[in-house]
Length: 302
Ligand code: PLP
Image (cartoon, rainbow, N blue to C red; front, side, top):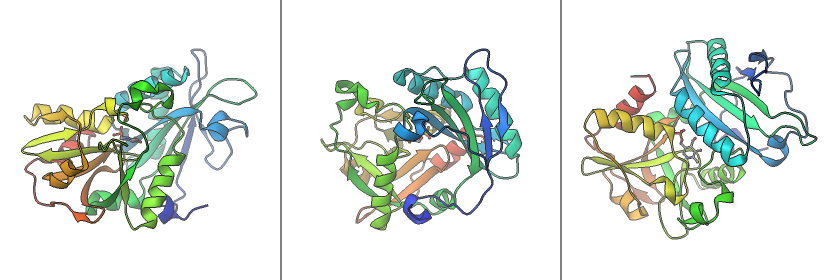
């Protein structure tokens, strides 16, 4: 098993909450599961195939941040996999229970997991885990990050031409993303920005790329084969209300290098300013748009 530094996680704090969420309309209410007890059968398809989908959201002050956006995306991912999953009401009851169990004292990462269930047959598996926000995430927020640009090996039109790759879905098959992060860490970088084989900027393995340019914010469109970020969407709503335009436009690496600022946005790390891409140091001046503040307000921290 990799070290915490290699996997980009801190595994020093044992605090965990686990909530089992019933599937199907007649299922019982969600219930807390002892976090030190096994939950899945050994042949659960999440474990043996990564066959399922998930969401990760922030808990702030004991409350989940933008749960409706996450549930809408989870429903889209589930539909793309042919899964049903619990109803939004069942998920919300589970999220509420898990967040209350965690309490208001510290921020947490809450994960919703939906698996196809045991290979031998049976119901889908749906559960929630809550864990502390990692020190890696807190440092990225505070200090910014150095990233390496890595090829993803696909052209930017592959989402449409090969929908079975599920590029717009948040599936449990994240092993390649974790490998990219280990590859970056081994070379001394904090994170990754993926490029398509035709040179377009895509996304991070767990984040959305956004740049500031000439008083506007620009982020690649979903059709290049990336996950539609809930943090970007929530931030764009605030930005719009504050008169800042957020455009979706195809970007090249040279656009990042020339931008007034570059960030990686995601639900738990929130906003990490990119200070360096490979051996190029980026502008770290004030771009005149308070992206950190807008993201904070979008998730109920501001
Ligand atoms: N892209 C990928 C591949 C991700 O895993 C994530 C994180 O979930 C994001 C983008 C950012 O999405 P969000 O802002 O909803 O966390």
